[in-house]
Every structure is written in structure tokens, then in C-alpha cells.
Image (cartoon, rainbow, N blue to C red; front, side):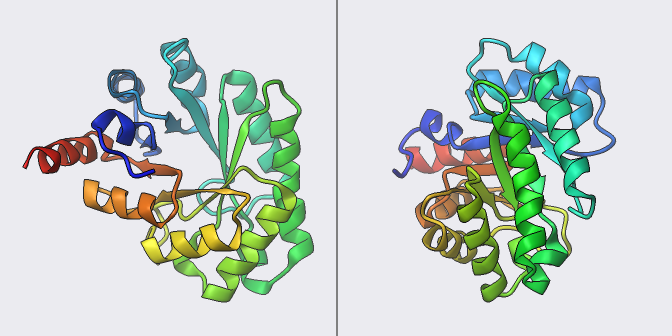
Length: 230
């Protein structure tokens, strides 16, 4: 459904701050904005999960953390441990970076083990934590995107996510979101990386995204309101 109000659009957005130099005041501001605008979630590094969970308790805004970020090059065991620690600290969702080398090489066994390890950590708790798997779509060929999405769907992950937003290849595109949604219809899609305007966010939603990851969330809502009033 295409959002028609700012409140509806906010419900798609993970208000994100993954900058390593972020300090407590930055996280407090992020969470205050998330509660004010009712974003779907905040997405922060593991260091800040506990604070975000305390600040957003009973607000309706979920808390997401990142595992294997930003390279995806640590072992499945380490990613699972990261996920467990964040969940214990109050995370409702985990955005993990997949083993990108396994995707590029078409190594299904390694990629499946990678995703399954973190999924088990997310499913060990009640209610279960949501798992989003980042495939870095801008760095992949169409065939590699399809392969990663097929594995993710067969494993049973909740979301497939385009990008970390840090890869030199770029971030989300509507074309990649559409291909991911078509390839893995049982998974939801999160578009992230380089989304800074309302028009970009709406294009991703129209292509099939159920979530938008953005650090420019407030600016996106502002742009949506302005265009709606014209």
C-alpha cells in the first residue's frame, strides 16, 4: 500500500544511526525523533541497544541492531553471538550482513549456515526477534541477487535487505528491490542505502519494499508533507 500520510510513511522507516562516532546525545536525539514521528524502528550499533530500548520502552517503536556489520566477513558463530547479546540487551530486530563472498561464489552451504546461525538466535526468544539479511545488492550481478534471495527465502529469514549503505558500489535501487521481491515473495524487503528523499522512499515502496532504512528520515517526512500539500 502506498502511504498517503506522513504517519503512514513513518511506519515504513527504520530511523538509522550507525556512525561509529555517534555519542549518547546523538542516540537520545534519534530515539526522541523516532517516538515523535512514530518510525517503525531505530537501527543502532550494539553499543547503544540497551539505551535505545530503555528510551523507547512502550513507545511502539522497535529497536534493531546490526550483526557482522559492515563487511559480513566474520563467522556465523560470531554473528549469532552478536545477535544474542543485542537481543538480551533489548533488540527486537537484527540486521545481519550476509557472507558476501559466499554469495559471489554461489556457495549455498556456507551462505545457508551463515543465515541459519543468526536465525536460530532470533528464534530462541519469545517473542522471536525479526531477522533482516543484508545482501549488498549493488555489488552483485542479477544472478547473484537471485541466488542470495532464494537461499534467504528457503532458510526462512524475515526480510532481505539491499545494502549496508557503506559499500562503494552504492545503495538501494528500485530495480533491485523489485527483483528481490519477485524472487523471494515469502520474505519482506528492506531498502536501505542512499535513500534521502520522499520520492526515493516512495519508489522503493512501490517496487515492493516493506521497510526503508534511512538516516535522513525526518527530511524524508518533511519532503513528503511538502509534496502532499502542493
